[in-house]
Image (cartoon, rainbow over all chains, first blue to last red; front, side, top):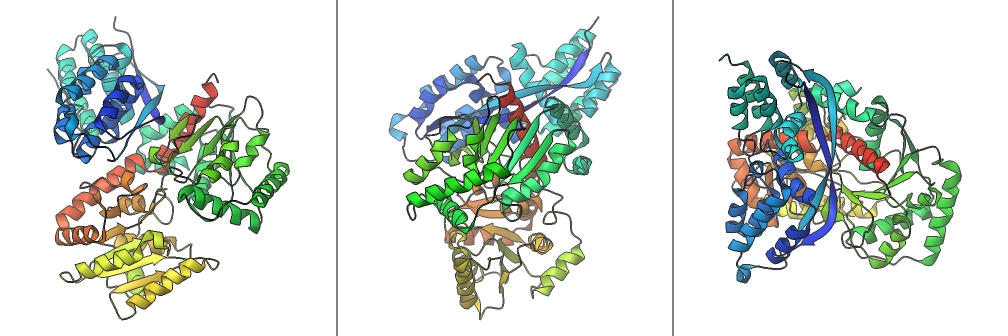
Length: 208
Length: 402
């Protein structure tokens, strides 16, 4: 029998790491050593913080590069979808590699606007809502905050070291593979979380 | 009272706050600042403290008392930390600071609390009373990124006794800080008279009362009369705009009776604009919340052309009212405005003039930016988020091993 689904939610508060950089060279060196929850903060939490706005870029690394005139690097990093990774160290390596492959030291400048590395201090809470079947699951999703949706769709994957989000994993075990697949395909990196939540509700309500 | 926020943040967010607050069951929290009235810190605490209690976290607020000499020193200290220059600290001022701090020891009981928030430098010395097992947080509301070294040395004597400190943004943090540093933006209260919904009739009546034509585009800057807010730069930009656009400009602010510099700036502005019927320089009483609210809601474009700024929450207040905001690329303004999305960040009088014209010419831009501005404030700069951040910090430091 499928284990009950426990609805959780997540909060975070940024802690400044004290690492401030001005040039691309410094940025790459910092990225190699910074706490992995700093990468989490600037890539994943950034999705949450700006999900409802049509920002130029979805992660704060790209936005900083763009603001300082490094358009190519901004684009190269912007296409890296953090949802394709569950291992922050692997993601760190991809980011560093992408920067090193495309970095032109002659175009690097000092004296530009600084980048401040922060990291996320997280707290996970459990709600009283538990689902044992599809109806209860749908009810729980309807009552979920976007923090909760974000936790189950995005950050639980990092905790569980899997590319499959919580919702889809549970639905698959319930025998709802099609619904699970549809939820997996939702583009959280590019879409508003309210819309994502509504799409999940719609998928769950569909009769197949 | 917490339920009153459901229309703004949703029932599920409030429910989650209750769950989070249960983790702090039995914890006693104290906030200490140096005034009950006036200024952003007191304004937030007036709401924050009852909300923390309503969520079951026993919270008190006490005010540190000082005399004129003490506050004139802490004002100087503030300027030295924020601007990085000014009249040097004298040794007798330090002696007086310590004397007043000791006097407050008797008045302010900090012993019965698990977590103590000390706001800004004035009550900072109270940390001498810290007991083993207690957690003390220094909540700094000013930009100390490039302080006067002597002023910083003075502050550091106390700072290292704290467990953590909190700043509005990483850009405000001085690089010599060694204790853990958290980043929490300040917030606005949607239920405060300056942010509540107003009827169109009240907005019209307020504008008309001050001689402003509610049918004609209005550019607005709400700020103290202070050179650092660059009202003269705003006026220059307005004069460029006026060559092509029929519009009005209002400066809405106030100066205290004991603020000669404010009065000087106010009078200078009045003199410069005395023959211009489309410019309004309005010195309002400090508690004119509904009037300021009406001005912000009645404005076409809101500007904030500060030369240096703390956080500048007036930007979020205008964004909450769905106004496009053009602000200088300084301090907390650049954290609130997303350039090209909720307004524009500018670096000069010319930049300001160009962006005002762009917005006056395009109603679609104004509406779109206004919509996204409100969305941004709803998610990032409302008091409920601020409350949640405080709960998280309390939970984190009480569970930390150090």
